[in-house]
Amino acid sequence: MAGEQRNGSGKIIVVAPNAFKGSLSAPEAAAAIARGVEGALPGGEIKQFPLADGGDGTTECIVRATGGRLFRQIVTGPLGDPIEGFWGLTGDGLTAVVEVAAASGMTRLPRQSLDPLRATSYGTGELIGAALESGCRRLFLGLGGSATVDAGAGILQALGVALLDGGGRELRRGGAALGELSGISLQGISPRLRGVELVLGFDVENPLFGPAGAAYIYGPQKGALAEQLPLLDGNLRRFAAVVEQELGVQVAALPGGGAAGGIGAGLASVLGATLVSGAEEVMKIVGLPALLETGRVGLVITGEGEINAQSLYGKVPVGVSRLAKRCKVPVLVLAGALRLDLAAAQEAGITTMLSIADGPLSLEQSMARTAELLESTARRAMELLRLPFVP
Image 1 (cartoon, rainbow, N blue to C red):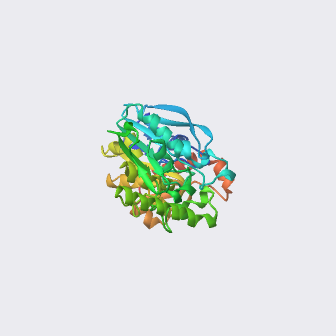
Image 2 (image 1 turned 90 degrees about the vertical axis):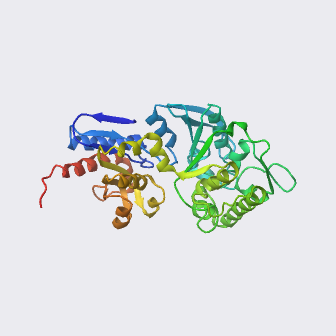
Image 3 (image 1 turned 180 degrees about the horizontal axis):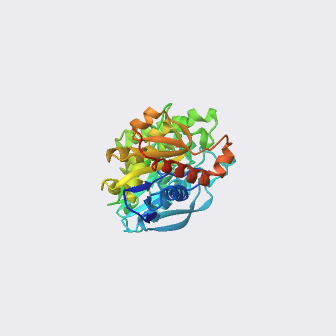
């Protein structure tokens, strides 16, 4: 458990936020909310479950919650330069955790250097290879925050899959090279993959290609120019066609196949990996469902920087709320911006939502004060629980 207070009686209040990007990590956000709850309800029992959806912070959340270990390693960065990446191992040693963002993420490059035509996921494959050496029986790969649109080609190459052009030569790295793909060979694949369950956690359900695919929807935030999007999308189509031709696997309509620039589709089709909701998988690993099923939880508080329609497709607050709804536990969402219709939120299990802004604030001011605003909003919300019921 990442954090826990046992100083009273009554039902447990669970604090389970995602990170507030650019402001607070998930553990920092959980601690701020817990301080607010404790300030209003001293003597209450609070349990903190910092969460992630497969993107930045996933490894840290799981390692902290399970008493595991973090390992650092020099690997290939998105544009080929050596960088320090990391991977984790749960406390029982059975599950290794890798997040794409650790080696192949947008945060590993200056904004002006983002280039999905060149960017490769090869470094993530190197982290996976290192994690497999631990003897784990299961490997969870968090898909989120990637700088790549290469359908996981770099990962596959790092793990011994041969991706060949029309002349039988190994494909160059990066999204632009996928257009030359003509063949796939699994003869040199890493033997370490045998007997290991490979699970991919996505935070979006977009398909591999098309108007809602990896290139058109997420390419621009990874540095792709408008005129480059048809090329990237066409290359993803090429990858899907060759996979179907060589391996007999169809990936065009795979939900989550477009996650992390197509890594979801690439690893599901070539390595037989299973695609799941990243938020739900992280919750399972850290033990949140097991606690909610005990009937001892009276309230769950979750949140992240913004709640909007996209949150319905795999983001932490909605994943937490759907789980809590099944267990008949009310949910309070705290966020910097609320852009989700309340009816849609309640259908997903959210009881109510509160913005943490306490007045007209610029984005910069809000981000600088996130911890303070989270604590004060949580405290005000909990003070309401102390009001006598008025029929």
